[in-house]
Image (cartoon, rainbow, N blue to C red; front, side, top):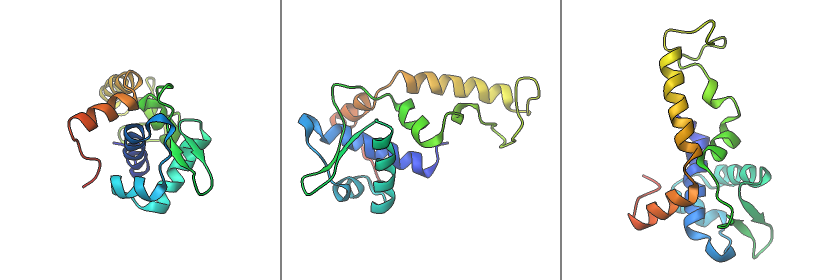
Length: 142
């Protein structure tokens, strides 16, 4: 459903939310190792999230990435940052021109599912998911 880039972004930010409390900054090697993603690709993804204001970053020897625990980040924010604003409008069959007026055979079923998913992701924070992942010892990589 999500692109590989978005999957990696979600893994990384969930790890970050669970491990960067009290302003602690995490390095890219720690994050990529913990979530099983390529280091350089993960760095690029996290830089994108930092530029969009979803996470923070500090350069230098004591730098790294962090998430502000006082500022909840909804999962949908990460999806939009990586996938783009039209993610929940894309055709389920990959057609360029698919709409309520000129639908593909899956249009209305997919629209309903996308709306449910979008609402769920709008109402769930990364911090909630990170807390649950830590409590239940859920894994973030294969």
